[in-house]
Amino acid sequence: MMEGFSCTYQAILNDVPLQIWEAITTDGPSATPLWVTRAFHNKPVFYFLNYARCYFHYLSPKFLSDAIGPIGTIILVIAVCRLWKSGGTLWKIIRWFIILYPIVFLFELQRGF
Image: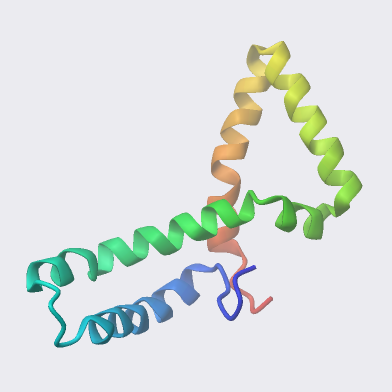
């Protein structure tokens, strides 16, 4: 997990204003044009970056090995590879599960873990 940042919806809501403030004050009175600062230091960009970081964090090998152990991660990877090669309806279900799995974690793990 990222140091000092938990990947939950509430953590992102609380952290985005601080990230925007930090980014704008870092640019400060420098030679950076104002339009560049306004284009890249806005809420949609920071929300997207935080959600993307959390989405890919939940698919990372480190998170999976922490959640299901190293042997479980290896078994999971082998099973997904076999399903991918075989194709069919089961692979379509697993593919949607892989796509939606991080989104569920993002909104469910808000209990202070």
